[in-house]
Length: 142
Image (cartoon, rainbow, N blue to C red; front, side, top):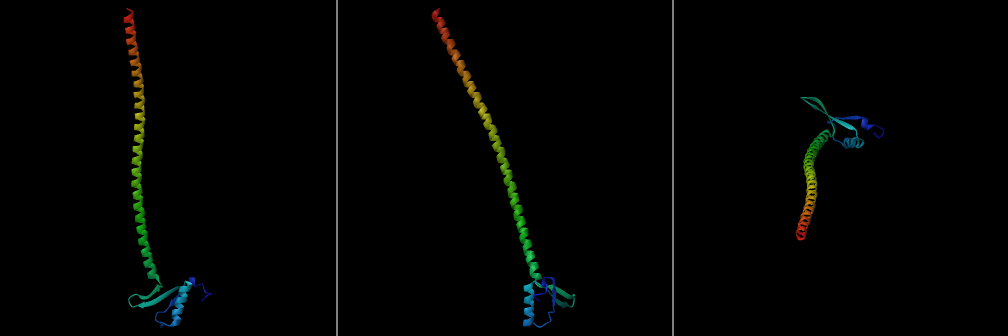
């Protein structure tokens, strides 16, 4: 059997054979080398039925893995929805930040205007004070 290409060979085992040590050894050897063993049974309604060894376990595992994948996909979708919500929140916060920058620029302009007004008021007060002094000086000279 070591020289056979067991991965390319199908072995047919008749289930009516008595369960002997030789048959068990043959089954274990086939499993060891990865051969596909087909077990045939005869059903009165369906006739001859062939089944691959371990196919039920494989199908159950496939079903279980498919359910796990579906759950993973749901988790990914939920995470993506959460990310979209977070990105919307970030966008709103960026808009608010932009509004704050605009407000800051406006406040800086207002502050500059107030400083200029204070300077102009100081100049006017200075001029009025000088005019008052000039009037007093004129009145003294008269």
